[in-house]
Image 1 (tube, rainbow, N blue to C red):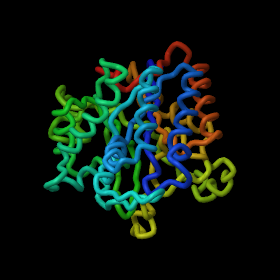
Image 2 (tube, helix red, strand yellow):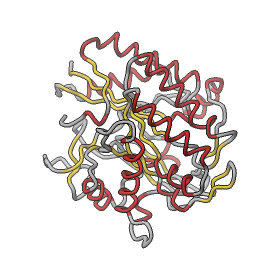
Image 3 (cartoon, rainbow, N blue to C red):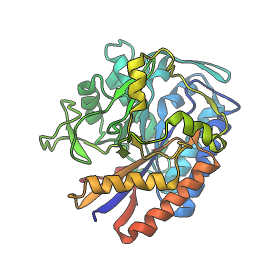
Image 4 (tube, rainbow, N blue to C red):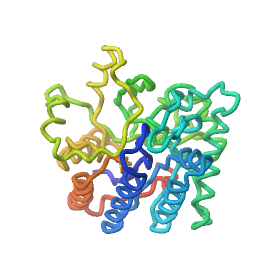
Length: 349
């Protein structure tokens, strides 16, 4: 049995297409409930904060959002949680009209590769600067050293992206989920590759699947996954059966799957299962099955880091209870073999 490090990561972001009621309802209230639950369980959270939303709202003078965003992240840092970089660069060109966001179609960092006004390096530098400014006010020793791409969109222009991340002090990435596939009108993600290691160094040439043992680069700590089996109940049936668990509507998405080609819709159906908390068709047993799969698959390793993901905007009472039950079950099953860590604590794996 390997020693287990568990990283509890959450993408701290608004519904990207617009909010239903208020910023408090869409992001801050569910995030606070999650923080309260984590404090009760004595586990650290990692918030990958969508900092460019803060910058854009700040630029437009929408203090209802920016004041609460800043205060909540600072309180999280003071409570011992981790805050790291999450970039949705479409905010740079998105228009905001009351509760609706008229989103730019430039969704990923790669869409800004040749942009004269906002290039990839400048966007990364801006995000780190803004996040450092917020967090260093309450913790002078805070350091932004980990990254997750918005929408996991890291496949295109990866050379430029990883070189820019490294040059700006980022040493850890958690954008990849093995076997995950998602296609929409603005996103094409396919992480179906044969990387045998549970975590690895991505060299500065941006080879995401590198296995050459490079020492200089960015440590990839992928979101933990399990391949989907042929015998699983189709997702649309589970969505209908467990609809009562679904969180209330807090806002709209910006992805449009209706325009996706049929072959890509089929690929979406075959995606791996993430170790994710905001899927209301999951239960604690299924989360544990993903953990057990990874332990068995990587059995030759003495130490294993598993990464869970969630989105507070998509979490309700059912998901919070599943979170608590998962923590309790992990501690019961693995006892002294398990440690819950911040991602920034990972120096060498």
